[in-house]
Image 1 (cartoon, rainbow, N blue to C red):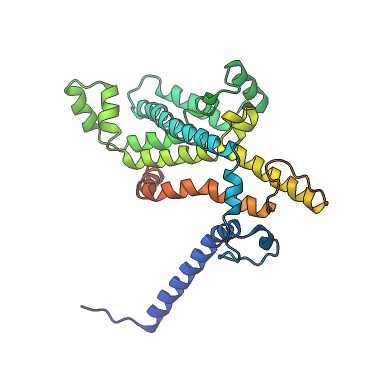
Image 2: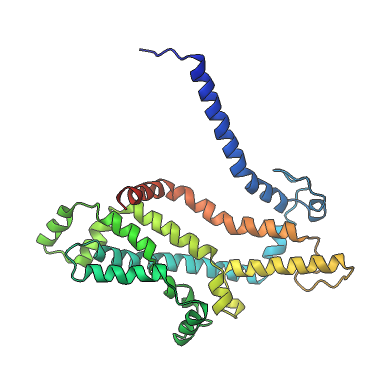
Length: 299
């Protein structure tokens, strides 16, 4: 039976559609505007008025960035720290969560309290720096991985999800002689795709966007990730623009002879930084939403 719709129903549907379109435009406009500026000629960008389409299309801003010999190496460092950091983070965080998910674990409450303390209290920048130095991690690639290999908030989310898995699965595996290590890798991990994808996205985004650890503990350009190098690129572009406005023609090696301004370089670096995550997120979205819902309902 077809239900007859009134004018008020059509009005409400139209209002909802209008609100959704407004939210879509407000959400996408900053990204489209940044992309347009990054693809626009630098001299023309100074005039302003660019919306979501470049007036004078050019690749010069991106060519300027990738002509810097530090960028490809920095990309490799960022990719390496993201992949290795995500894999080890999932392994160690998941192992801790799996253990704490068992109510019969001896000392479970003590372990939980020990995990909660660092979530509320930190040692501070100077003690942390001294600790990193004493561990020999200064100017070491593993400074990106070891300090954050266990995420306590991520552990709580994973523990909550593991607690929703029926005990019968583990009990039957124990009866068949399976060890806890085998249960974790062959039973728990395969059926925990939603929370695994969620935590992987959390860790991966944090590793990819991180720059503070490199600024604090790394002085070698060969070990700096992309975000740190791109910040240097923006600083050099800003410095060159200030020199140009002062009438000084010597703008340094990197930007010498280039038509650029700091806004164009900033937008181009932002697009370069955000694009990899935007390409990965759609493949994890369905798992991400399911994992978050489980954590919100059971937490």
